[in-house]
Length: 209
Image (cartoon, rainbow, N blue to C red; front, top):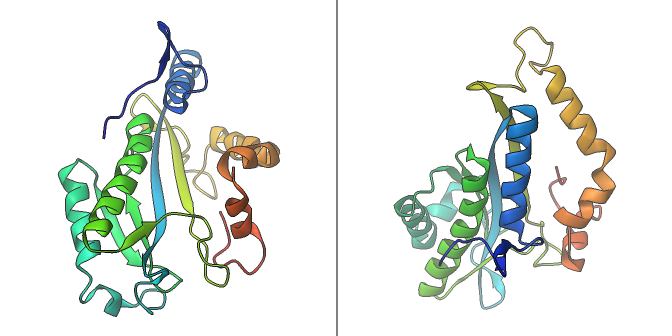
């Protein structure tokens, strides 16, 4: 796999997601003096013969006893520079979650792509599918991709205020308010497919956040 920027002629392609992120990060740095860091929580199913690989429930440690797929995914992820903080059994049978260490935003986004590729290749070697669809099964919990963000200025977390009741700065409150104000429009980006909306309906499993 090669991670790269897409060009149209001699200029970055306007709708290339990676180039768009780089432009946004540059603007935040130059206009606001802010550097963004992020981390992701990836939920996925291991599937064999169109069924979940195991019948384990949430936090069921027995799902790891003989599961060489998960162990190999974690080890290979580390080999390519990804730092999984933990991997745990999720709500659905055969469903897992991996939390990745926060890093500079562009690298963090790249690691989501890398992790998915690692998981799919490892699973395939074991005759299993690593499925990251939001809702692969109608009657089982959906899978999410949770994004955690922080803004930094001068080496300090600009979202943090130790004297605030909730430990948050005015910048953090404003940032959250902006997300809430534009939440409906953002849905077009964060839930872009029909399958995405199947996860958002009541009863789909853990509440999207």
